[in-house]
Length: 277
Length: 155
Image 1 (cartoon, rainbow over the protein chains, first blue to last red):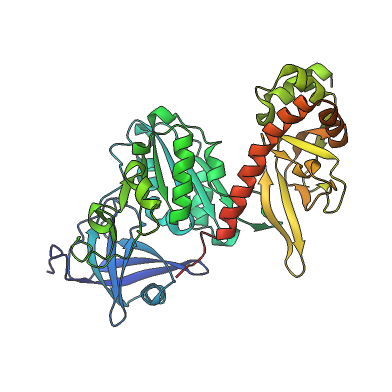
Image 2: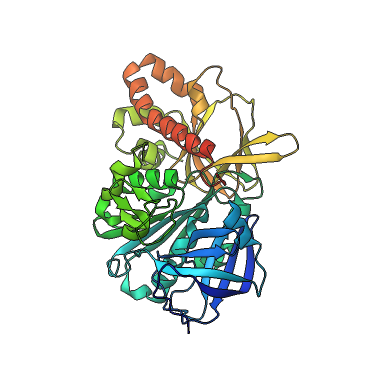
């Protein structure tokens, strides 16, 4: 049996399912070939390698209680992610992980939770939403605000439609632009924050998406009264080793892979505003 | 509808919350209630911008037609929002189409009437500007973010 405790040596996993989500986004379900998966916490990531191509950090996007499958949602952008998206059922990949810290699920218990996601940023918070819905009575108001480029690029569309039918969670979706048949919100996701229902004095915000979007979303959340230490963001940098040794993902005094990827806004505000970083 | 109840509706709209009562009465004197069925256009590109709409219910898609692409919606305004910023700037013409995507109820303010009152009473004009400027700045900022195309693939 392979030992996953050595963080530098990849285990081999087999693709057991591949779903085409949007034009350039796929979700892969993986199963370890000769190792026992230890599970993950929402917010963590794996280093996935396509043999002969390279390795990339990919967040978990599946159900946290499902220890049989490792689920990752990938956008085909660079050579590694494109190779990952083109994998077929039965192909194998390398897996190192899980790495990084987690979204503040325990801290969020008993509070209002507002999740703000943009684009592919919905993938790393989907495990959070699964947890919140499975343990719905332990939280106050739960809100998901999601922004996408256009209606065709809405991730997990069928699931979002299902969540919207629930009476115990507020779900709002906006797109940057749309064709005339779209009847929903059009505009930036930050605009939805002002209309969301939550108690800023007793709320936790979870934000994930492109860094520019997160910067302005965090500002809008702070303007609405949520303290910066209660606004959590997931950062993305060029992660390589995954354990804080190589320094590729350094952001000022932080290593994103080891100290993050989840940070509070009070730690990030100055760092995100520093162009040299 | 009575002026009194119309005034209360305008006073409760996000754009005019906390607005001076005397000024509110002047705005109300230019206003009326409107109801627009889903799918109907409130205005078209090039039309005179002679009305400001304070949305109460429903949603209005603001769209521009592009050859070969049909109508592209670049913004949708919902309850608590105002559309019709073109009323402020000569030659007072709409630069896009406005289509009701749901049954929409709104307060329509006669722009020429309000412009006349603002011209006659600069205190009112300044107070009105103070209400519209944040909307304009917010839209400019939102437009910048949309132009950045933050959700696109950027390698």
